[in-house]
Image 1 (spheres, rainbow, N blue to C red):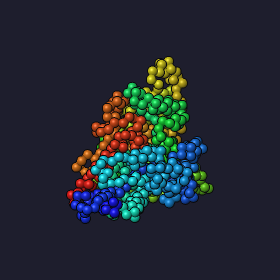
Image 2: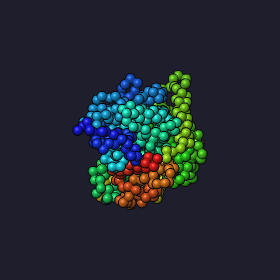
Image 3: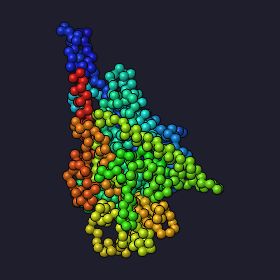
Image 4: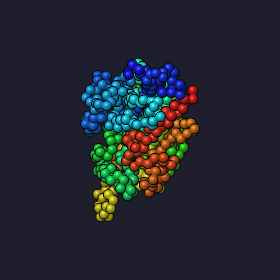
Length: 614
């Protein structure tokens, strides 16, 4: 009987045409051949595992003990961190993706999916995106889409310390390589779909600038992309990573929705927000906290890394950046009289990033190469350190300009989360540095915040005690005054920035001084990327292409009401709890998966319609 069977291999897209050669006296078997449409996931900064030229692991967030020992312990100074990640001086070839870690790649073993290693999964932060990749790979796609396409899921790790332009160049080559893998197997494979998170969106857009690459990309789905940069990069280079704050823990609905997570965050607030001063004690507040405290708890630790890497500097606000209120001036300087100066007027690179002396400078030159001792009669390598920084900054500026001038892929979609305090602007306030002012601060008699009316941070920190705390304990706390600890410069500059400046705005220790304090973030966003930048891409209006994940049911309404700047500008399309919609954990939510899966299917349906109409 098998000899009577005639097999016809028909490409799915050709099913619209009659199948020629069918015979009436034989059994005719039609085998439908699907096109291979690889999905390539591109992670954000710190989302790729890296090794150095000697083959030794340098950055492996999948190994918590390794990261704690190499970066998190008190003996890991800014100098040691820089030495591990940057080396003596930045070199784009100093680090590479650690894809061939045999021990780590054992976790990739799966009897039904045996090529994860070959598809790049070993080079990315699996504890962050691994479940997302698995859900993508095992997705039961729409029947029509499944008839036409097969979706192997690849991951593209890259050296995130180097320029995103270089990463884009390598992604373009990776797209060609992946397509060739399948065509060499006599499969039909012409295009890919890109799914990105955070800085990975910049890499993908950079790749699509290359000649011919855009035609090989069927569509792009961006999650939490800092399209025009984020003032969070500036804030953290000045003050390190923020301590936990602004959790809506006074809203009873949060206790019902997330009792365990609220309790852990409350404990972290008690430890970190009320003066005990043991930074990052609660390591289980969220997976995302690990990268934060490891990267740096003060400005020197963060600047020693980000200030020496083009990839980090490319996350700074570019010329196109607007804050959540639509204003181009995102840096606000408020003097002791309440007068405000706003920057940049036109050019953030010249007005802010190249500034060397004034307190609002992005980089303290001494922090670029921490721990360097002065040689006799001269400053050790100061000029070369600053010059290298300017080279990196110019590279970031060029990248920003090229990306802004490039056209956007016509099948682009973006989604983001909001309602978490984010740096859409950076505010410095000044007060006279007097003895009486210092005494009041020590006694906890001043808040030192922007204002009671406008500051989410003031409201959140003031209510950071245990619900129902007895008045006697409250009074005892006043008498013990944790401000004796929190008002020290050491404390204020760990997860913040405070300095004394002269009448010219230059940090100083002598004369009539002003005490300048950088305020905590208070804008709507995901904690890292403000809403304005996450939705900044100007996309075609033929269909809805931008989606917001936030507190759709307004369980956090009373909290947001304390500061209207925290409220999303647009009605949320999907709902996720406060603890799940942060910048890193957003990929773990059901909303992110639903959006991604649905958009991929929509992209494919559009391609199917086009093919059938040819």
